[in-house]
Amino acid sequence: MNHKLSRFAALASIAAVGAIGAPALAVPPANSPSATPGPNASASSKANAYGKFCATESKKHVAGTKGTPFSRCVTAMAKAAKAAEAAKAADAPKPNPTTACKTMSKKHVKGTKGTPYSRCVSAAAKLINERTAA
Image (cartoon, rainbow, N blue to C red):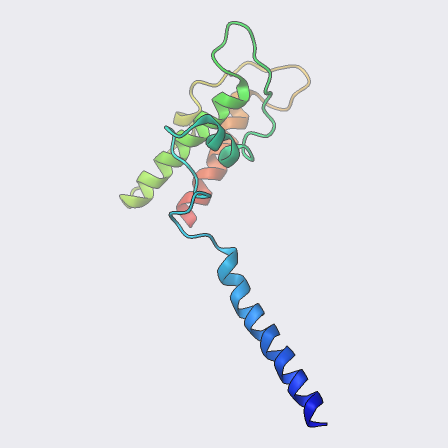
């Protein structure tokens, strides 16, 4: 009988240690590689970080334009993130998301919801709110 009790105590202690240690492992440190990169970071690291905000943008290159709509959106999100971090550090009001998206097209594309500019402003506003709230 004593042997069954010691097994139970050992399993309970292992489960308790696992439950306590799991949340600490889930949160990466602030200086880890998974932290959001700035606007001068490589294109691949920006795409991984800001891609969730630019998922609706096309990755096809259009002749006569610089970059793809997706890459321009990622660059705009990086500018918005940098402005949000600077405003948070200086205890200033939130930056305007329209300044980061000023290079985006305001021309409506048939079959899509909104314009590239309006989608960028919406995503930048979400990003800025996320950055200044944290």
